[in-house]
Image (cartoon, rainbow, N blue to C red):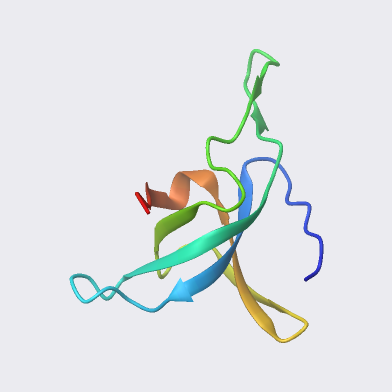
Length: 87
């Protein structure tokens, strides 16, 4: 697997499921890389709350789909994460 280094508050997510039966516009994925966070207007860093390895729920229209070495990923900002999985 390639080593990703997203910028700011962006995540790289490996999709692990299609749409949920309850809402076809939502997808699940595993976070494979996390940026360092964004800088607040005060100059202080605001770290990303999501961690590598966590499973997330996100809108299927969120972010940008990318393909690396034949594997599909989604790059999206942290604020497009709808929920963290309890699993």
